[in-house]
Image (cartoon, rainbow over all chains, first blue to last red; front, side, top):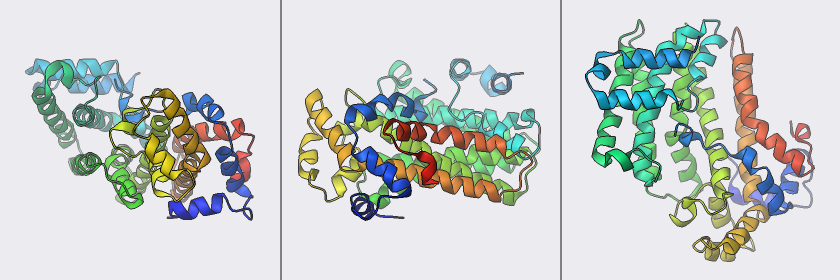
Length: 51
Length: 309
């Protein structure tokens, strides 16, 4: 398992910008409003679905 | 045919329910509120080439377990929507015990009485996970340990039992359990992303709990960390919440959570490809649904999800 600190270092390394990391870097550089805009789809209140 | 309704009728007509109106009422309410993953036993059953109705008892059993988990979870979380608010904590706790017993009884009365062992194991592990979760543990290792205990066993047991009633050999059923447990971790990460990005602030912020993105922002050494720690107790203020959530995005906490989700999705697919199934598409569909929000997020930020595979 990659530690959070290692992931952070890789994410913001200028040498890594390929594959999945490129997409994850874009997420980190996005505006909050863009992330919140898709939250309704991300939303998945797993344990509370039965209420 | 609606297998869920059939499973509920199976429960409602048992003697234990007929003679206990409150237990019957709880099950009546569940008729209209299906638990998450109630259909997982059906999918596993079909994946091994059996008929959907062969999963009937597994559906009934995991429905009981889910109801019991929810009753107790709401008490632990002091959730204002919880049934304990109407019936009282004692009655809710007692009903949870009854539902766990009922689920086990349903399985003991089948041609596979040993299947009750799997449900029992799931209940025990989940209870331990709930207990640990209530302690607000705050390291990366603790987070994953709690997730594997609290969230994974339910999904693991749902697929395990479904495959078993579909005629799967023990080894294959164990692979279904592993797959379900990975799915449980995926669901927990989804839930944590959802809670961290809620507006107004989800109760986790102020209750000292650490969903995955918040844990990342608190643990990792990044420039905004001191400010984030300062803000997390002030998020009742919407401006403070907005600033804290902006830090979650900027420090990579959301990216980390999405990455962990993608890793588990890939592991689950790899496991599925190794399993010898009559209808693997039955399970592949569940996995595809779980990654759909991530694909949407990638598209929103202009990234190519397919390039990650």
